[in-house]
Image 1: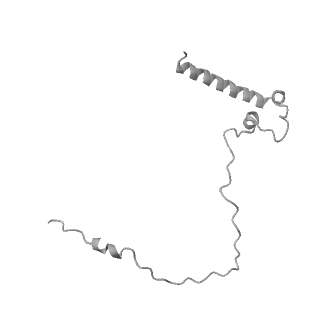
Image 2: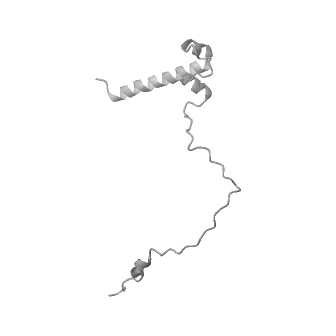
Image 3: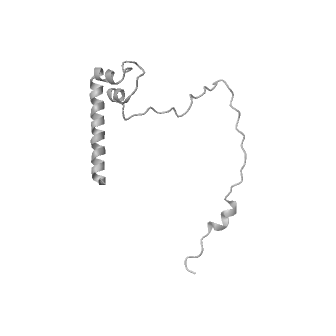
Length: 103
């Protein structure tokens, strides 16, 4: 049984070699064409094209919302009517005085 350190070393070497292979394919379009037959098409997307375009660590953001609706500027705004609202703190007025400091 191999130890954990050698497993990590093998994994790191594999990832480095895979990234170097991707860089080599992005630098050589002819080699990339040999690997992918559709590499010259505009809609071809793979790790090589992402590295070549420089956005391999970026995913496009999803729009957060829809386009805001236009408001008709000629519409009339209703007048505000004043209303008296009872304070919710009137029942808590018993707590406005603290107990004596020295009892």
